Image (cartoon, rainbow, N blue to C red; front, side, top):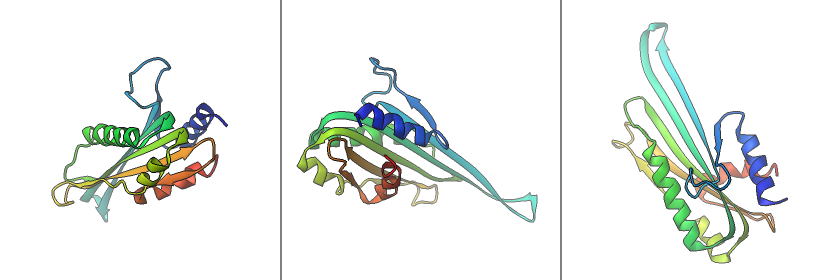
Length: 166
């Protein structure tokens, strides 16, 4: 399967629960990312009646997809920091905010060995007002099309299930 086929399959699997925006070919509208997906969830808690409102809970997730021919450790660091920066720019912490996670999925024809080992060491997180206003975590997954190898950081282990369907 080619990179475009892998990306198309991944985006299709995200469409059920996420708002997916794929970048137009030849434009730089989404920066270095080929596509992105957003998930928003809002729930409320009550005590016996709606008048006894206890809490609002908001969860968000921003997933960025990148395609690379050859993924180097420098390019990995660049994509990771760009996704983290773009994801945090969309976070609006407040009393009802629980979490806003940022995920990056990189599909590459070839991943250099140093970059492959570096993936598991990347960790980013941020808390807002000592977690009273929520937190953000960074999840990362890379997929090498030529060999089918997958690497992820600790927070990104849940993304392996999505890749396993390919």
